Image (cartoon, rainbow, N blue to C red; front, side):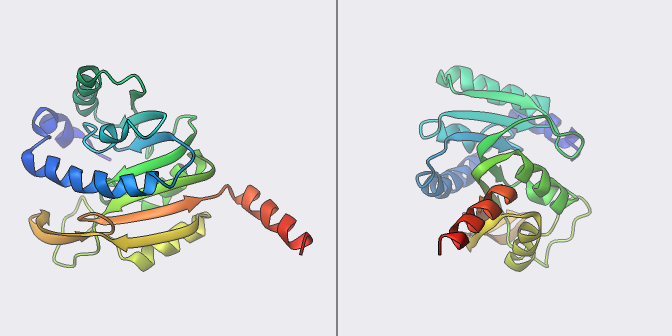
Length: 220
């Protein structure tokens, strides 16, 4: 994922429009996190932390990961200003190399459309999740009016469900939760869950899931 553009716009990234959109996303994501007992969170493609830093009060820890150092510098300044002790940043690009990390929850908000190989990045995130871990994706529904060489034009629920199922995710739930005006490449758009597509997935380690089901079958 090329980050040169994000490096250049980092200091002015938090526009009024992006802040308002983040509020919508935060509201929706909070609903999902309220159902989670496990509380270590990775925000992959966190940018300046517009979404995840607003969740710091309901999780034990947050690791903001982004490939743009400048975006993370803005995030670090926010962490310092807010006096957050449970949030830190890491500059990394999982499309190049994935560090050895583990988390109970991974958030990916408006990031998937920027990653060329959808299945590969979702596989990397699956490998990082702990047993019973949850992946929350927020992105745009498919919009055939969009045609750009560097981003996907959104995703259909069926195509994402198929990819996630092939990787090994369980309890896959997708819903559209917001419709916005000219928010996706200056086009009207809907998001799976907030102004985008919010994809909520409960992911089980494949081996654990198989063993649990074997145990249940023996007891019946």
